[in-house]
Image (cartoon, rainbow, N blue to C red; front, top):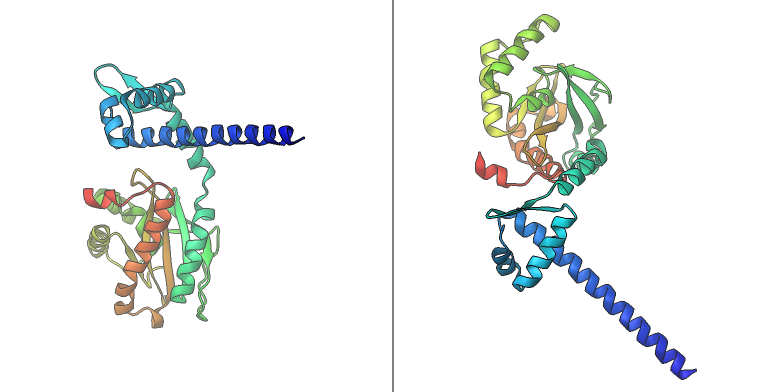
Length: 272
């Protein structure tokens, strides 16, 4: 009986050892992918970066090539493979902007007491996907599913920040026909958009709804493309010019935190 128990213990030890070895191999394989992503494209460079022997680095990289996680080109070296691209597309489809952003919106609403919106561009309009009311007794008429003009909303302007003066002018002119009576002149609006684009934020100065102001910022993906925007809104009495300026950093920080969930990194700030 004692021998049987000893046998079980020995078998358990061997199984555990194999599991640990397998985990270590998996981690090393992931490290190889990261090294190639960082520009270590030869076996020598990978082995030095990760502290592996050349034979181990070559074995891991070759296995990753076989599984299409890496490519190998003679006299050039390794590069990221098509399997990673496939997985990236699948992950992007599975990640919902609304679901991912919601807790961040709630935190921002609680921290400021103001109403927070999330939206995307839907053709020529800003489509509101989520709304988290603040703690103030302020009635803001927006609803989830509403579509609002781009030029008059902070959220809409944030979605346009990367498009440049020609597109901005075209949007302004088009909305002059569909939504006449806008209180900001064309040249002044274009001037404001240039300031907003440089700062990475936008304002709504009672342009879309009487006595409602907001601060907005874009949400970006791993390629630094704008995929949505959030806005912080409240009554003008709580949103004087000084407070709006003070909220820019907090709104941008929340937008960047959401962006990081979609692969955006601060490296893009260094390239601007």
